[in-house]
Image 1: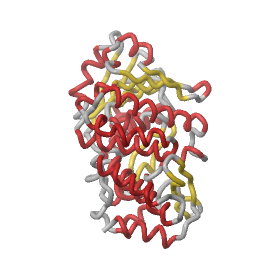
Image 2 (image 1 turned 180 degrees about the vertical axis):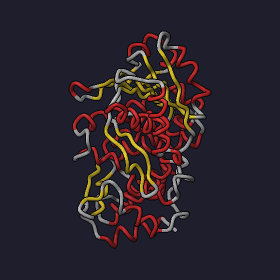
Image 3 (image 1 turned 90 degrees about the vertical axis):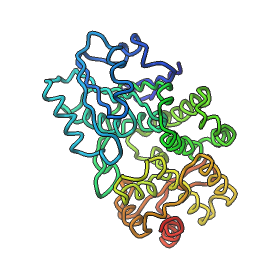
Image 4 (image 1 turned 60 degrees about the vertical axis):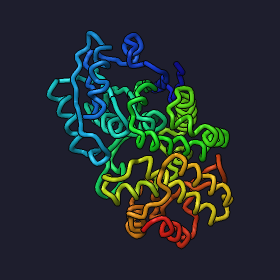
Length: 358
């Protein structure tokens, strides 16, 4: 088992990564506080893992809240369902919410935990690659709105992240590919060595080789933990983690969160960010070609022809990173070097979006 720490002073917490963690009652007992536990999951993950996880926590009062699966269901009404269960069972401030699932479950369970009685403990138990390498770490919680992605939410850090890599054995291939987009992101923004490793080991990841997956998860979490520890509330450096997300969130919002997985949209968005960087002269054409090749090999989309360019641009205007009416973008100075800027020609942004959209 690997153990990392998100360093946030008194609110620091561990990220535990290993095979079979969900079958370790001593570990779960140590990291899931409180007598009363609300287990939040969805209709896909709960039948696979909820019963066995509950069985590893003897002596607890465990209540389940099972939600529908999919990004389209990351809504305030479903967070309200979680809160209704907490209230109906008279859970106190010493309860713990356990998020068992992917990023959608984690975001909603964390948001409910942030809201209930002004904040209760929650533990992330991510079961998708995307959640294991990204969304379970850092304390961003929330829901989507018809007007934009993740516009409603709060920062609320978990007390622990328990990543059982064996859950990836049941992950659909499309979800695995979507998770790889976030791993690629970490290489692009901070670690050229990781990026080169991905180019050489992508087939091992797609084949779900445990050692390769564990390395990708650990290195991604190391990078995110370091950045979050320095900039918890995204006032500076943490914004780099949004590479490709402004473009990607526009794709998701414009399609009502119904057809694109988050990682798929981020993959296409990263290529748009790289292409704009090339047009601005900060990234070499060969590096953009390398990214396109890696995304193709990972089975990720590299364009969004089903979304009109004008619709994408409109959705980008209400992105959370807009400041003083200006869309702030994460761009690249090369593989392993990202920066945040609002200084770019509007025409270059429009041309880039038009090149990749319908």
